[in-house]
Image (cartoon, rainbow, N blue to C red; front, top):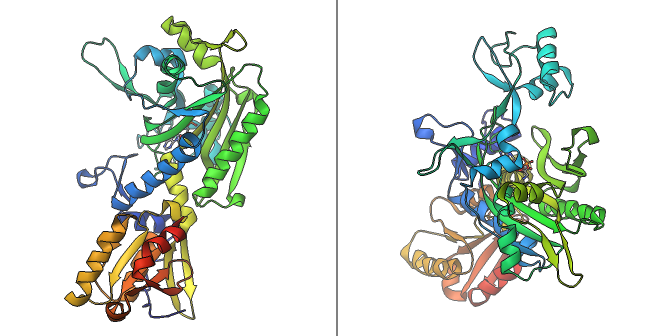
Length: 466
Ligand code: GAP
């Protein structure tokens, strides 16, 4: 193992892991606060050059695992703006939201259930009167101004409203992608030969006017979901399918880098289930701010298709030709957040590694499949006799892998920069390369270096990156 790597700058203020990740994400072009030059827009973020690659890799990995390699799942890409009746049918217009409470002193708004739970440990979600009483009786302090002067707890609908030419009344930005799947159930059944059980998958934006956004990209007002509506026969042995979906969801989280022990299942107690749901489980991940919901899985019965059928006057049934049987399928819904996946990937990958006595590096140990940059191509010196052939090599590698060319500062500093963004391989072209037509390939995780013939380089990297 070579040790030509320079020491990183030291003596930065002590930050916790989350602060370090947020800072690295901005500094290196993964995630920027939304509309920052105008003072920011809370609950929105932009994804920079590395963030967009990482996000796309996560979505592609998901699509490959759950759609393109499965004969029983098809994809759809529906609109964000959907007919307002759809949200009446699904119950969102009536009651999609959380309970909120305002501090009368500093005017800050909070989720009432979170405020009560943080202060008392009691879970009173859905019980507004009780929450109002507990907040008043126990004189819960405002987390912002520390006073205790509250409004009553009220329901707050989280859907964003907008208008559309030619349509009376409100149009909503979809608060989940699922609605756009249900409305296409009939078209999909009519236009494909897919047989039950089967899934319809979609990746897309969703919007929620969250009472309190926060924890970086954990709770956002604009985000993306990856959802599947998996349609089954009403009498199918759904327990086995349900368990299989949970395992697959956990598997996906582990493919993004999660350790098994950092995942746990939280089954919703019977009394908290929606009337139509037989079972709902949250898959939680141990984020630096505690175990929190990463993904979810719900048995939704025939609620969605029945309701949409009622409100649209369209028959939303499945006809099994072999059995000459017509029925309304039941639905299992595995749902995944894209940004929570991205946050998991950053958290799981982040490592400060001690090297030797007094040296340290920050390395993002992304699984290679999702690393935003796969290969860095580095000329040992900026001299034209090296930069010219290195740029040629860079052009060749870029056709196969997302690559970066970097010729500034020492080779050790360049390795550190690539470690910090999780690049699995650095390829260094040196003066010997002109003679022996070989380059040095350095592995991000082991820091081992190997001399590889340029003619074999693409195949070598392909094998390593697979
Ligand atoms: N169709 C079911 C549904 O939307 P959900 O639990 O409300 O269920 C599904 O959301 C997933 O979407 C969550 O598990 C989470 O990963 C993600 N998600 C939900 N709200 C979010 C928010 N405000 N910001 C970021 N991701 C969110």
